[in-house]
Length: 164
Length: 199
Image (tube, rainbow over the protein chains, first blue to last red):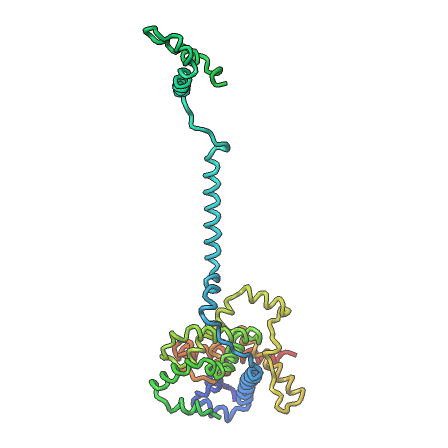
């Protein structure tokens, strides 16, 4: 016999959907019959080997823990959450560092112009001198014009002395 | 021999079966008991690694348990579970990095002896060796199949599912399932011929 079954016909036989022509050929051709038998045995061995292996599988099943217990674990799980928190912390630290750099290292008082300092001194002296010169003022009692406050003028010129 | 539950299920109509499946999900332990070995067989056939198959079986039931509120009963419970198992097996194969480490630690062959179990059945040691070699050839051929071809092959020749059932479980058309099976069988026959011709 020259012609034998094609691959498709062997597959049809294995699937149990072969036509009558194929089955007739199989009855006549010993070679095709042997090949078909070989394929069936192999498939049966494959089937049995997995079924035997599965019989030993007895891993116990446990339902997952209740949602309340697992809720925070589930919250911790996503990796992007960790990455987001890390990125936020990094940004915050950079921002804080930049703000810190803008501020001078030593706190200073507000800048006051020289005129303002002099005015302040003048005011202080005006308040202080009359009391200090109270006895002298008594001596000058009777004159029409009270003496000008010479100390104030001098103080304005000699700022350093007054400060001391 | 079919269990009483299977007999009852066979007698039920589609709607009754749907309601029965939904009710069955309430008692998830019984679902696991009933389908555990089947899911393990499907996954073992697809990943050829008993440890991975065990882990994936657990994962399969865990996924089903978490998604049980979304199960509407359109497909049978078995089909629904098989779909989850197939997706898990596909994900497992996609994970190339894991595959690399697995091959590295298993000595590069990827063969899992635990998966190739030969039923003794009173066979002589020579016969057992012959069957074992045949099985190795089947696994070798199965490894070269595409993921879909292997899935279809396992569902047909391990789970003995019909073409229509396989089509429902894999979301393929029955014609496509048949083509995948033809290719898988052709590859298997080719590998068997090579094995027989080898000294």
